[in-house]
Length: 394
Image (tube, rainbow, N blue to C red):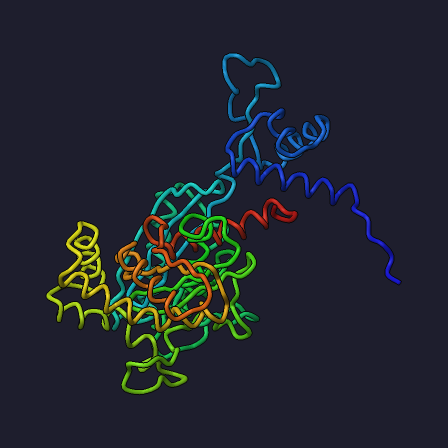
């Protein structure tokens, strides 16, 4: 029989410290009295943790609560945001976007770089690292504690490495290795990062279970079940582009998603029906224009016809996770999903209701800006705070 385990005073202090630090991240600067109320801890315990965290350089005196309150009880304590900086990277085949944020989560600087397909991998790596260094310098960061990296393709759940794939440029692997020489690295599939961002900041806030379907030049999915991101046994959960669907000329293969769901709804696939209905430009531009016309009430012409055709295609892939996982909500992300807004999401939802016995709400992604980059920043922040703050997150 295993002996019962009891919490040591050191363990309790670690848990209390983490609770207080998380509250300061969530609410901003707080007084000791406010920390006492929010944590439920005694006044002496709060006083001890404030002294302890201050001595560790994690919190500082950030001012006073206001004119009505004077003395020690009015002192505001806040996170030392400059204690560490992190970087989020959205790494695509054709380039990279970077955001550097402080420990409080405030974005201090951003940058972007296009990388030519024929660029020598070593030179491309130097270009990207130069962008990263410049962005960090503009943010006022001497060093970067953690790098959150979003990349296309599979991430091995054991090694944490990017699977070698013929469609990815060679500098991707070089970049991950170079970043690991500089600090902590959290590598994640781009659709999963978009799902994390929607869960924390966007259309899936407050939900424990949902599926994000990424509709852009590439196609994928992020699966959140019971509050946990599900990556699968080999890191391949959500490779929706390979799903065999009707309406294509042939089946996909293990190394080529051509013939799968990708063939119907990728950016290049959407451009053909868009042109047929009189829309020109990229898939994102065409879908956005059609959605704007539909939202303006011009819903019976080419715009409606294009959105209807795209919805007919999307539902073929969305139905699979809907009936297998019963997520309750599907978020349409990516350039196409975001551009279509409610006009496209509502059409997909209506078609899904016709083919699935399960109630599933379909909505457009709502994270402002680049959801992959936001997810990379959030992931890097989580890792850095776990390392610096210790203890379990709330």
